[in-house]
Length: 225
Length: 229
Image 1 (spheres, rainbow over the protein chains, first blue to last red):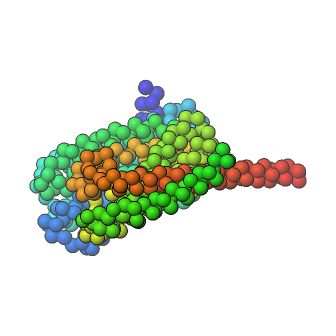
Image 2 (image 1 turned 45 degrees about the vertical axis):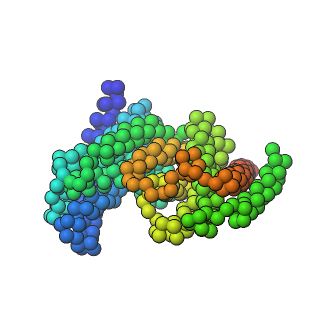
Image 3 (image 1 turned 60 degrees about the horizontal axis):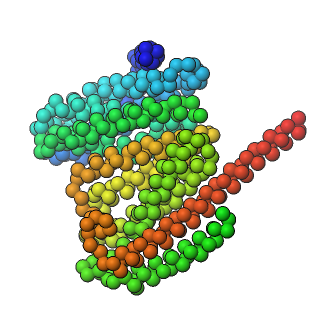
């Protein structure tokens, strides 16, 4: 167990330091999400009442697209200088590498969300009518669902031609229930019309199921045998 | 086994013709919906056949993950392809029926959405097989198939929360159906299952032959390279 934790921490620290020095992923995600927000804002031009109903969808679609930008870079970075091959021959457990990547991406996407949320509030005049603290839970569970699947399918799409396009093709169909839950939970909290409890539980179940599945299968995907 | 194939083909042709006769002439016309209801005899059997094929795909994928048997992988590929075709038939015939009866082409109802999401997952499965360049295609595809199967109950519960508009299942769901209609429906299902098995079988054999050809060619080019040295 301690070896798993050690490898996870070392990889995570390395990724965070790399990102802190280059800021590649976070910059491209931020600018991409900003573009999506602006384009949505003037193509719909909603009133405050309308935007409360549609904001859940817009926010999560923007985050989903932006996350794909970062997720595509997460393994591509390891291909340079054959780092991934070094991982394959090293005795380090595969799932600790996977967990480190997921936690790293979780941090990147969370930072993006923290920075973009004020912009959404400004552009769409948002104010939650329901209990706003639940939005934090939805954001954490939803982001985890996105990055756990995204990191896994990004590793899988390394094995394909045109891998940049393959990631969304694999990721989007599988995440439909999670995406639906995030959007519905956010909308019901913003409008205050329904309780978001069912959706939060569904998201939690989704996270548990897919974290387990991805951790179990990652070794097969990494080694391909 | 090879002798079974033509017998199955003849049986399928007979059953399909009898099923068509039953659906168009033998079955009584539905009281409120009229003639358009007859699409039911194609819509429902296609759906059941598609789900059976997806189940075969899951079983074959698990078998491949456990045993690493290339035959299981070829079966998984064949069942996924044929399943997607049947699922497409379901998604096309559904709106044709829904437009005159419900007045709308499409609605985000439980069964409709579940079928659509299944279709999307299996199309992405086929895309992965298509784009995957390395020898690990079978493994990646099997992993995706298992993850996709994990997704199905979650999709079910997420849409279950919405109102359900699709007619409740008339078979085994407490609904009532004219026994003559049920007879035609079951004949058609049997015909579609035979047809699905037949196509799946041909596709499976084609895939096995294709692999043999590839292996032989690789071997030959290897031998030629060795000989010229």
